[in-house]
Length: 458
Image 1 (cartoon, rainbow, N blue to C red):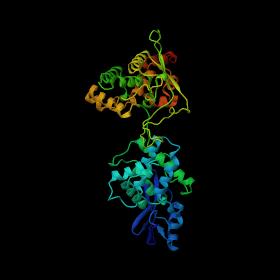
Image 2 (image 1 turned 120 degrees about the vertical axis):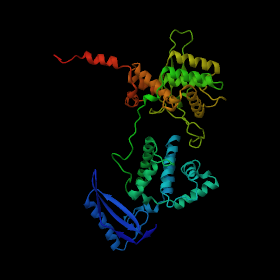
Image 3 (image 1 turned 90 degrees about the horizontal axis):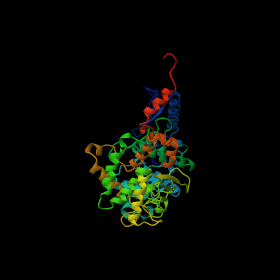
């Protein structure tokens, strides 16, 4: 550990702010200034006294944390890079592929922020790729190519110890990095919140392993950015727009009818994309063509999210998962309206699908790829929508078909509890997402309010 005896402790500085007066202790190590803010002068005086006492005792100060060596925990003996790898391996078996990717991204950003010296000789993109795809990937770490292994060895030599987390200024620097993209722009609030949540789990793990005394991340109001899960009305499609988009997709010469059935299922039944690609023919309960009632039923019981072969245990691109927010092996039933019944019946018949086959397949009978789905939808928007509509959030994501379906159900007067059951959400989550989009019921609500009567004489 790098230390110094060249220490100067300055007087306490006070600064009046909107929240009150802040008292800051300032000191320098080898000419580098360190600061520690406190809410009261008594706390600042006590901390400054500790620093002065340490200098009088002839105690060395850490150049990493700015504190006297006696203030350090066992964190100074643990390298952050080694700890991050240990944390990755501890989480690997118990987390999903998507979560593994997110952990790798968060640890990658934190590691770059905790380097002793800037990687001037390394390409920033190569450095981040080495950390994200190999260092923090339990499955691939040992198979890293020689050039990647060289980068990771440099990182291990140049990473600070866990004692860096005992310095509030360094913690703030890492949190700033987690909220900033590589080009310097602000990251999306949801991404920032997810990164901080992952880092918080890592810090709690460090406390359990007795590497740190306490979790150094800030708590309380303002610690994480506010986010909203509410759907914007601007992203929802009306019937004419949905018909035009799906109609264009159906006319595509390559796989158009197959993709049309996929998108129609999302629009009419509100399935998630990963649930739709996991559906098999035996899960689609359709009535006979001669039946008077042409309502069918879709049995949704699993999902196949696309996470990438490097993050799944078996090397498949898709990872088999249960339904979101439900117990293992749980299922839900979704009504299949007559319009969707006709679409699925024709699709199954034309493709000559058997009961055990996937309903929606790729060109060679394989799993329908997310890239194919997204590309088809993006092309349809560019061909069908006006320039202004294409630039807007209108149907920008494939997922907006599900949002449109659930909103239509609510607007048509289907009780929220029933919509939540069909959609695979809880009622509170459903309302927090779609309450702002419910419309068309105001005239009826006004009549109900007036029916309650007015005050006498008014």
